[in-house]
Image (cartoon, rainbow, N blue to C red):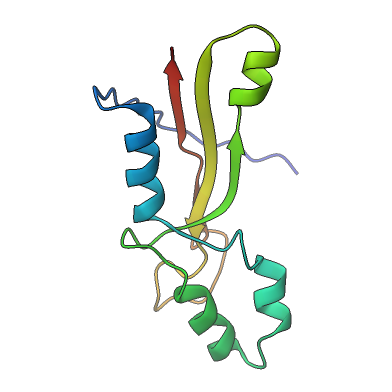
Length: 116
């Protein structure tokens, strides 16, 4: 099966230091990276308990990180002096009143890049 969809790419330029942007972003989104999404599922006895455990990891933005990739080390290895991080964020329970389907799973891949 092949699905085509349109993506809107937004670029936001900041005069703030890279670390400050990263810290602000990471504090606004929660994370399931440390505990692991599969572990949350395995330790839950019901759908309600699972949803509660996942929602407890939401950040103030309503999103959570599922994956963080720091591109800085490999960029340095190939001689580029840059800092870059890519995140997979989302919330499987958005919107909250809707049963999960392909439209209710909202995942975003923001990237933070700074060419030093």
